Each structure stands twice: as structure tokens, then as C-alpha cells.
Image (tube, rainbow over all chains, first blue to last red; front, side, top):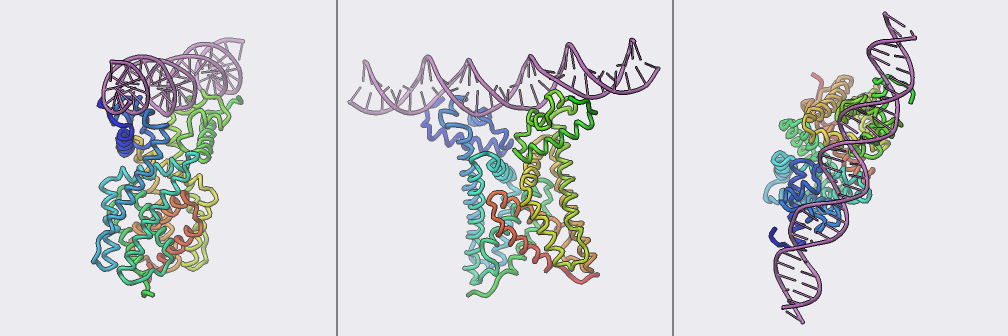
Length: 200
Length: 200
DNA sequence: CCACATGTTGGTCGAGCGTCCAAGACACCG
DNA sequence: CGGTGTCTTGGACGCTCGACCAACATGTGG
């Protein structure tokens, strides 16, 4: 095998682990499956990682960071009125779900894994802290640029938004009813538009 | 060990499996952990079940049936106006979540397990079909006894309700923010009340 | 009382798992 | 050139898992 710095190999292994998880699920992402995906000999694994848990920890943070970044890109669009901006954001998010369901599925699987693994609960908490933060940020900026304020406390509204997106995704992963899922998003978007007040 | 019909032993093993899952998670529910919880010798397991998957299948259907039945009990209350009835239902559901988080956690874990296990996807679909059906039933009966109709198609509204509950629960399992979770439920309840029209 | 069905038990098998290690290959620097 | 630190590799370990089975115990019906 070509000689490579341990740091670089770590990155490739993390990427390979994510690919395996997306394709086959978190539980199937064994050390052997991961090095197999990366086409490396087994011994490499524990030369680059203290333990399998260390890699999993890394995967969780990378994956939430990347999905947070992806979400931030979603609401980059300026120049629309509040209503179409909210709608666009919701449906752009939804496109992402339908385009790559595996990634979202892995997100949930990792959350539940972390909640059960002693010492990993904190990671699950941080995961949702980030999600809530992103949604709050979106709501704040949208309100600012539209010159309105939300009539519901921002943390609550962010949690509501997060809940609807998570809930719709979860249900769709099970029954794949795209039409109804989109209708729910439309409904939630319209609801948000009823929660605006005059700017203060 | 006292002699017992295989059918009865099956039931005890299923119950033991559920206890293990609620306490330690689905992945920890190994054949050995389950017979240990039921205080039976290991050999019993494959005398009562073809395979571990057969038991898991049974656990999934039992657990969704029981949570569906529990949900049905929640909205038994008659004699209130629509608003308080909706509120009461949401918060009774929420009490159940805070009282026994493990059960709900297991529900999600089993969904994701089923979605990954070849031949089990159908079970995940059925699980959510049942949930949606219960929510739809609630919305229908509530509307009937209040003499109103919903201005949104019932399947969509049921999915919306399901999404909010699932999403709030999932987020709370990670960060345990009860106050904000309840505020979200209140918000969703108020939203529902804006979706009523005159009876037709 | 025998025969047959049903239930009980402890041990064992092979596979897969995370982890570890010794031995070698390679690169860089004094 | 020799030495030192970094990387590579295949194999091996101890363990847990789902599954299986032969031998035995117990109940039931003729």
C-alpha cells in the first residue's frame, strides 16, 4: 500500500465509515467493513484510531457539522419576501431528504446509538443543540431581513421547526409518502407565516 | 425449571425482551440477555423461537399495538370543548413520554432496525400506518363531537400531528428540555384550532 | 404400564467482532 | 552510511453472538 500520513488515513477511514453507514446502516459499520470500503488492511484501523468508538465519535461530529452546513446553505437566498423564503427553505430541505435518505437515516441511527452508549449522551445533546441553533439562526435572519418579529419565543419556534422536519422525515423514511409529507411542510410553512408581528 | 407450555414461554420471553430493550436498548437485547432477564436456560430460546428475528418481529408488533392502544386511551375524554380536548390529549401524550422515555426510544430504535433489515421494511411501514390511523381517528372523532370539520385533509393533518409529536419527542430524548417541548406542543395545539371550519 | 409427544437442559459449534502485536518496509536526518 | 521514527501488514487473541443438538425429564393417552 502506498505510504500515507496517519492523519490522512484517518480522514479516508472516516469517509469510508460514513459511506458504509449510509449504505448499510450504523450497526454494519464494523472495523472490517470500514477498512474493506477504504481498501486498506485491517491493521491500519487501530494504528489510526485508539478504538472504534473514537472513529464513531469523529463520524458523529463530522456528519452533524456537514448537515448543519448544508442547512445553512439552504437559506442563503435573499431578495424574496418572507413567505416564499420560508417555503423555499422548507422544500429545499425536503429535496435533500428525498435525494439522499440514507444520510438522514444515519443521523437518527447515530443519535440513538449515542443515547445508549455510556459517555456519548453529550454528543447526542450537542447534535440537537446545533440543529436548533441553525433553525433559530434562520428564523432570526429571515425576520430581520423582512422587518418583522416572531410572536413566539425564538427557541420555541426553532424547536417547533426542527420537530416538524424531523417528524416528517422519520415518517417518510417508513412509508415514503412524498405527497402528504410535502403537504405537511406547506401547512407548517403557512403556520409560521401566521406567527409574525409588527417589527419593534 | 417448572414445566410450561411453549406458547406461555414465548409470551414471557417477549415480555423479557421488551424489558431488556427499554432498559438497555435494542442492540443489547441478545438471546442470552433475554433468557437471562426471563431467568431461563439458553436452550429455551430456540425451542420457542425459530430465530432471534422471529422474536424481534413479535416485539415490534406487540409494542406498536400497545402504544396505539395507549394513545387511544388518551383521547377517551368526552364532554370538553374542542380546544381543551386537543390540549388535554397532547399533554397526556407528553406525560407518557416523560414518564417512560425508554419505551418511546425503543420504538424509534426498532423502526430504524426494521428499515435496515431486509424483509422488515414492511413492519416499519405498518408501524407508522397504525400511528397515522390513530391520529386520524382522534381528529375525526374530535371534529364530529364538536360539530366542526377540519379545513385540511385528514391524512395530512394526522401526519402533521404525528410529525410534531415524533419530532418533539426525539429532540427531548436528546436534550431533555421539557419546558420548550411543552411550549411547542401548546403552539401546535393552537395551530390545530385555527384549522377548523363550519360543519358541512 | 408402556409409548409417544412435549418440554428442559447444558454444552458446543462456527462466524464475526474489536483489539493487539511482532516483524518488516520505508523515509528522513545526522 | 547507520539510526531513528513513521508507517504497513498479516495473523492471532479472547470474547460474544445466534444457532443447534443429544440426552434427559415429564406429562398424557391407550
